[in-house]
Length: 81
Image (cartoon, rainbow, N blue to C red; front, top):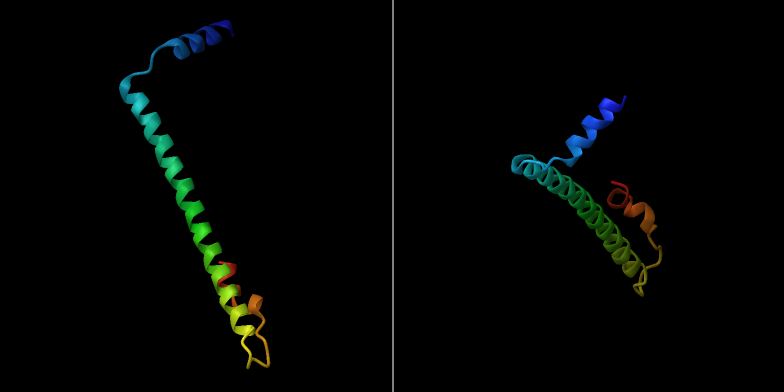
């Protein structure tokens, strides 16, 4: 048991090679790019949803409009994808 802990301590204490350090940084960069693209996609979808509902509500407020549209139902495909 103590041999394992000693080996682990030696491994942690050693300086990493340049190659392994670059691989680690590269993996972190790729992971952050993946998270960023997902968050941007979500933000774009939310803005499409808001824009659809805004234009629908604006059209409902027009003076000659007798039967207002249900904006939640009309914009459902843009808001739930």
